[in-house]
Image (cartoon, rainbow, N blue to C red; front, side, top):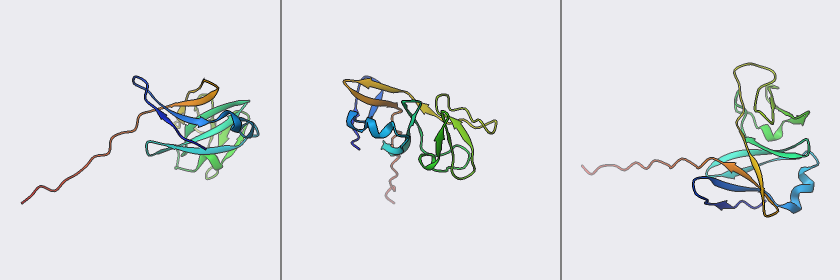
Length: 127
């Protein structure tokens, strides 16, 4: 999988999947991508690709290893189930999974992802 960052005005884009890989995604596969030091999970649900955070908001479980079906992903650690379209938790109130839009441009699929936070640098002051 190839990751590409483009810099339009204020948004950043990361390449999710090339068109040749679309057939693999339609078979219910899930995988992760990395962008600006953060990991995201990519799912095929109802014939569409969905992008979410890679970790479960409950306890940090790896969602790409979870069970995908009926438009939802179930975390493999504690069985919390999240709707892939809305991010709502189907099994417990108070948890929500962040979802990100997927767009098609020039025959390629892109996810609109947040810009990464700048890392802080600390220096010791001379004595």
